[in-house]
Length: 197
Image (cartoon, rainbow, N blue to C red; front, side):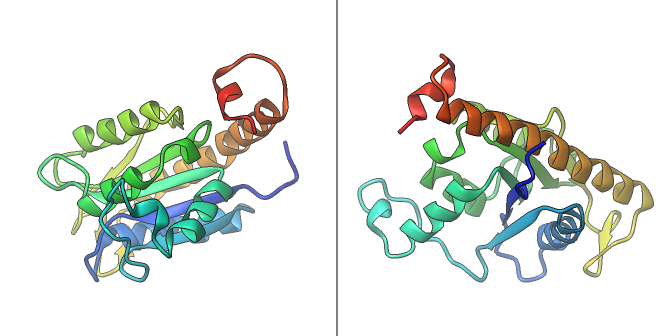
């Protein structure tokens, strides 16, 4: 394993000031940091992101700095509420801003849903695949009021699932980050060859 700290970008895909997604992301942030990862939390409540416009977005004042943060990340951890069986507009807007920056990285997904969030998880996996990123073979979903209440994680089984999630992000994130770096520096054929500078 690389001695370099695994870099995780944790995205709060909700603008709700009392978002349960934020509660889970902050919990995961603490656990990932305790495991030796560095975590960059992107919360659109604190850092608003203008609606994606392909003609102007890449020239917006905040774009270059955000792109550098996405580029630096080895793992993209996304938390979104399930809105009508789909991802939130804040999450989609973030994903619309980037694609090449996600290639070869690990996506890990968290969905707040009263219906298991399966379609939302599948949509996030589709985005990852279209951007040549990897995903964990499972996503984490939870129910507000049952698993998370009053800004706290209250369900013991959900806490255990999050422990497994942190472990897998850390282990598989490191493996993929190491291989991604080698592929970008190497000369062998592979899908990351097109991303070599």
